Length: 87
Ligand code: HEC
Image 1 (cartoon, rainbow, N blue to C red):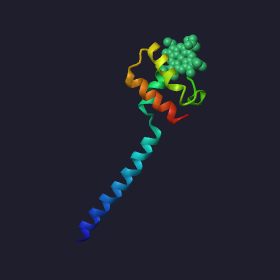
Image 2: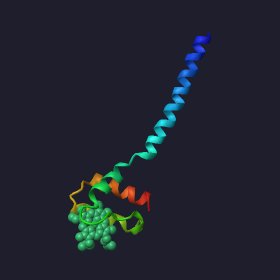
Image 3: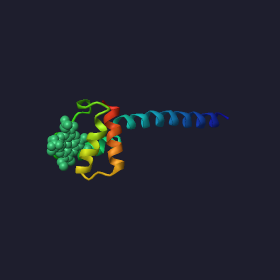
Image 4: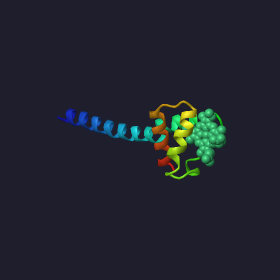
């Protein structure tokens, strides 16, 4: 019986540890939108800041320069989501 409790406790603490671990990774890792933004939007100029334009202005800008940079619609959507989320 003691043995079983020990195993349960070990499993629980592992689950808690894993939980902390994965949320930390989430915080530190970059979203697909941020990665696409950083790799594509500083090819021709310095990286614009999300606060440079309003949420209403970004869609037209991302599609204009996204087309110039030959980005897919998926990339453009992810970049736009990143800009608006960080504006
Ligand atoms: C092919 C080169 C090129 C790429 C790639 C590019 N830009 Fe630009 N960007 C320009 C040029 C050139 C200008 C100067 C204004 C103009 O002539 O359109 C500019 C200007 C801007 C401006 C200021 C324009 C304004 O109306 O105030 C913003 C904001 C901007 N780019 C955002 C982006 C974003 C976001 C991306 C990534 C999706 C991007 N750019 C990728 C060439 C590029």
